[in-house]
Length: 263
Ligand code: ADP
Ligand code: MG
Image (tube, rainbow, N blue to C red; front, side, top):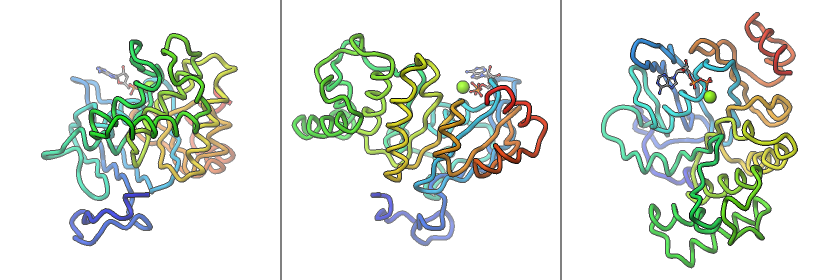
């Protein structure tokens, strides 16, 4: 991936970022409050390039808030978030640049209803990456092929099924050529028969080496694809490890109870 070639120095060490040993994203003692409600109470999370991290946990445990903090949709009250060793949560940061490198896919697609599929995908590259229209169209067509929806190029979102909308939303995120993609329950709003097609696209991305952080209740997918599973509850990471560690050998009562409900 392109970030291997970037000449950024890694944090205070002054040496170049090395994807082999340095985390692409480091979340360090992250604290987030909404007024008096403490939602994230000291989260430490290291994301290696090319890894797939699956976040699980009960509703209200802070999973969405964590993703939103990483994507600069929330300000934080303590700790830090670093990308390639540089803080993106403190001091002056170009938020648009950060969001270009850290893409996000939401539960409710958020496609523009008045734009065609092609226009939805090319908008970001044309406006934010200043890509010429012909080049942006070619990129969009390549991505439409990748998500299996070449025939929907000129359709409007209202003419698509939920699964198709989500695949377009993924293509739109990919059009920014991000280094990492955050997924917040990407299949939770879908009819059951459409879940598989979206998970397939995500599996292909994982195989291609895309770095991903995924909030999902799809435990089969987590088992198959995750490099690491992170169990959050009450604003802290209760347990994390390989899928086998968490699913076959859960350590805490909390996780045992949670798995009993979702498996
Ligand atoms: P999860 O995604 O794990 O279900 P969230 O991160 O959405 O959890 O929410 C964690 C807690 O933070 C919940 O108690 C929720 O009500 C609260 N919360 C989330 N966003 C806001 C907000 N913008 N203002 C106030 N409270 C919020
Ligand atoms: Mg959520």
